[in-house]
Length: 112
Image (cartoon, rainbow, N blue to C red; front, top):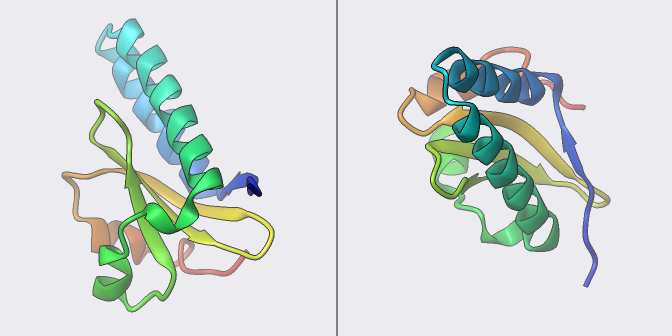
């Protein structure tokens, strides 16, 4: 089995930092650590099985190949596109937000 490396875009890294900061600001240190573990597990799964993510947002945004994978026990979704040699992570967003609006930000839609 080929495991593709995960390469988060700058915005995805900011999303992760903001989620961790939120949990820490709320005094939920265990939740922050759990979030990091859940994200690492999600990245490992996506690297092994990139086709298992939902293509729903790809259809909504007309972005072929875009998929989403949810974190266990956390509301965040990892949005990514499988490339030939890696997984391009676009965003890590709370599933309760306006996903199409967040993904349609100009800097997100630029190729890497």
